[in-house]
Image 1: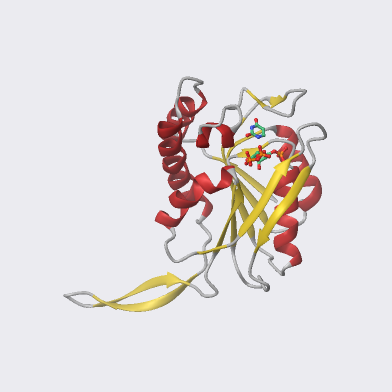
Image 2: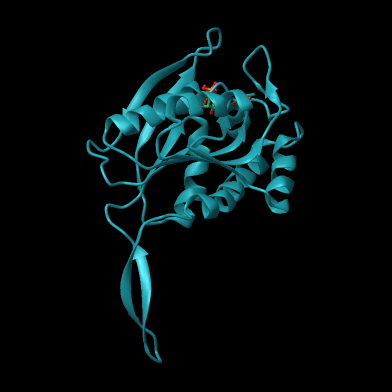
Length: 210
Ligand code: PRP
Ligand code: URA
């Protein structure tokens, strides 16, 4: 497993505004989309491509197109949905699967309430979208669904993570081809399972239900 923390002033700047409790849902959604676009650039660095011949108005040259089977984006509903448009803008050729997971507020265990994935994910690069990696329970369950369906190459894009979540992913997938691309690796988790300093409840802030 690999972890890549984006080290770029634009990412840190946008995350700082996102973290601010005064930032309201409309601006929050815009910032999430912009951050996903920036992080997708890093997350797709090893995207599989196939050589193609391109005729320019002047000459013939060699270019690339995204290989088939096409990459699969998998937002974790609900908050991950807020990242989907930003990812699809950068990778319009991708197909989309869905996993719905919510944490039990008391036990912090992930509860899966929806799953709509292609049956066979062998040879398919998968990109999981979820803004928050806290205990790691939700991401670990999702990545396991993908491996169970035959995936062998999974990248997760998260805006903010706690060290506890990264450790959990390392424990579950340390020897697997899993990459986690982060906007920031924060300090810790608090007793309620929230990332500190974090940005609060990403789903509530995206959808105005805080
Ligand atoms: C949030 C977030 C992750 C999860 C992270 O979702 O979007 O899916 O918590 O926590 P974990 O790493 O401890 O599993 P939440 O359960 O609040 O559901 P929501 O997206 O529907 O708001
Ligand atoms: N889920 C969130 O939305 N925020 C956190 O800090 C932890 C889990």
